[in-house]
Length: 154
Image (cartoon, rainbow, N blue to C red; front, side, top):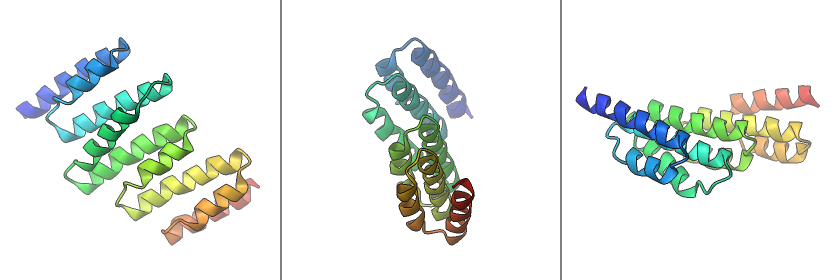
């Protein structure tokens, strides 16, 4: 329990550093977070804030993905990666969302990210690119859902 409280205290400090624009300090402090779930959350917040501000988020993203993969239960790891991928998708960065999805071991959830990216591509007029992405989806249920949704959007 002590580890969790320490992690949450450090996480709160990381959030304050992010708000102040001190991203390097925030990353240094985040590295000291012992709880893997909280560490993943902190690294994701740093990554997303840097991306929103147009900063270089490569190192932060690498650490965010690594910390998500280090979460001991697969469900927690998948949840962290999905959250990060959807945040990038919400910012309109379909490429980054797809790159993050590649790290996911859960085929169904990886396929859901791919399907959502395909919908965003289709809405922006890139229908053939969306179709190509849907064709590559491995989960047949998600692929069928994506095809149906794409057809209804056209």
